[in-house]
Length: 253
Image 1: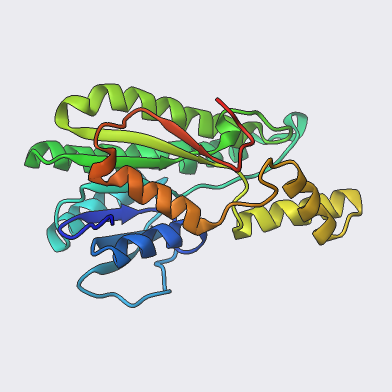
Image 2: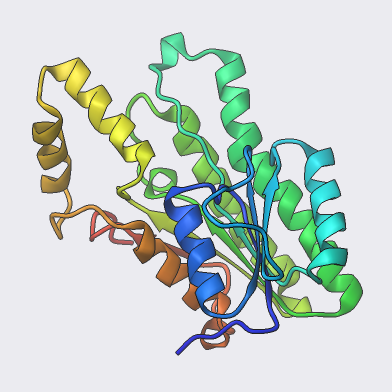
């Protein structure tokens, strides 16, 4: 049974969906959790073990300020889960430059800023650490009208591999989780878009999406949380540089 007493975990994008599930899982296992989102998560009140924080991860200054403050309040962060992300669909010909930059600011710059700040503290305190990036199978399999999102997640996978090679000597592992279709508000938006563009009902669109998954079902936020907790545990101390698919068998690499 995985336990995380004496660990300090920071989860970005923790206001709902997979981020909330990840934060709740670590809390249930005894960790202190710093939960970040644009709006401070309000699903649990602040306590000695739970610190809800408003932070825009695309802001280098905000990230550095939060990590410096809570390193003093909660302790040295030794588990970082870079979960915050956005997806905006657009055909290439209509893809606005500012939208492309916004996607990369959240999905790539955010994990970079958070990881850099956390790793600096780990090296200073000579502590081992775990970095888990929430990427996507979209970073491995391209999808039409999603070039910004797919490219950003491919960048996260590349960053994961490079940092695993760089940080191994400090006993810091870096891995990525690549979910497929997870039952979150983001996937509901996709279903509604399919429905609007095809005339299908939402239920028909959902069934169509599930039929393309070998296991014929969406993943749940708790599935993502379970894999993240495993990668953060001592059981995974010799796993680094991996990008693990969690997609019901869609991508087989």
